[in-house]
Length: 149
Length: 149
Length: 149
Length: 149
Image (cartoon, rainbow over all chains, first blue to last red; front, side, top):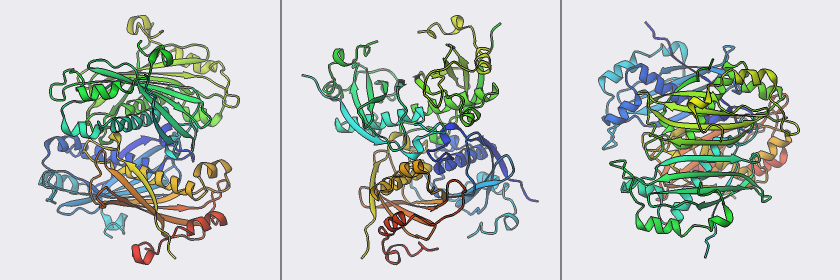
């Protein structure tokens, strides 16, 4: 049985817009990360707690986004988030940005690796976190044929 | 003998502009803080070093700004920075933002107190830092009659 | 009969924090403005619509904030917003930032003037907007003795 | 004869750092775009002028970055920028981020297409801009075997 994507909403703010009149591209990543923090909290693994405990760190090693349609001031955007490539010591997260008319205006992807914060060496995800993330996996073959590239 | 204000320059970037077509007001504070960091570095007391050494912290307890003219994309702005109210365990910094035609388009003020980072208690500024800051004081009575309010 | 302050909530995000481990002071203004946009939308006068229609503009001419306690990653903050000095062609907005234990960790104030976007000249607030803003006024004498300074 | 990459420098600021103690990943894109604006200005085609003239727009359709080493507060970073895939109506820009010890700590890539701002339809780059961009092309085969992917 497949999970459904985690949903997070935001509204494009005055300060999200740049001199070209559309959302400044880098701010899409800020919103993606807000969705990611919201998702980890919903999974019972809030990032603030992880950073305080210092047992693991999850540095972001790659980020990318595609911009299909401009995001404009006042647009209400739904982010659909799902883990797409979960391995022993790293995982990727895919974000689709959907506007009020149901159009996918952008997509993004972040890749996170799990390390020991003291040594910086890669380590496996703690079991509870790995299970929580895996529980969110949507059937990739049906929704994202390029997820494993 | 009076010092002259510390000078820092920046150019208003695409992402500084908001949906109203002018610099988003909160970004003025980001540029003010960049000027402040540049000034402390020029004084021989870079903030990154202070934070690493953890002997003192200089939390910002007040900030304010007045916006006289809009700052627009591509404008080259000169920030004139000067300490204006230096006391034993706190100091204020004034920033004037001057555009390419010599017009003061905005001004700002930040107030910083000196604390012990462990206890959070107020403490006096270290002598070397106090002397460095005091060396930058411009004659206030001539330039800023409200500096002491 | 007095209104109660408009309420807006946000959670302090990973990217709100700076190298000193607390919310970067300028980001408080970003959150204040998000609350302000949310309030105008609730009043039926969304900022995005105003900017599109170009009948009036509400440039921000002053901003200030006081920082009482550090805001930390993961903190859930309630913003209590109220107009405090409503005049014919300008108004001020006060923001109080309350953390999860009920402590006021910061406060802010922004001042907006109403202008004609074409000429840049001051003009009176449109009636509907003036009435909507006035309906939100809390008894100032009881809550903010310095509101009129 | 090959060009050499355009160089742009910045210092990692207090506000670039997030709660994990390193540069927040989305801010790398802000710095990349500052380098991009600086490069266009050096080419004689400042972005602010393009937006004002409204003959063309250059919306960003893709962005990606790889993070090799953490960027820390106070680090002085050199950005080496070069166009890597220049076509009739689009081009890509590659950014390499080099720290003070000569280590490449991150890289990024943005893809821009040229459109008519009124219709939104793709159009060819104006000749003068195309020539200016092409003049910056470094020999790709020697430096970036994946540039054409």
